[in-house]
Length: 101
Image (cartoon, rainbow, N blue to C red; front, side):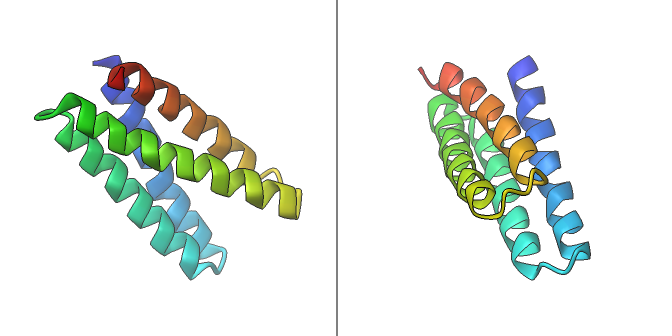
């Protein structure tokens, strides 16, 4: 149960981040944030029927976001939003992998 709560919080952070990025003038942040949060919530929903598939999807999204935000941080050296999203995505990845195995 706590794992699902962690994933819901992760999905909500992605969703909120999408709108914060949009307010800062980035349509790409809005689209990608909505897409990634939707896939996280889809994975959470699917985990009710097929636990491994649902958490596998969440793990995949988390891996992609860790890589994207590491690349972004190395390019821009801006802490926000890269470092918090790297940390949150790593937490979601750990939770997902633990449930996937």
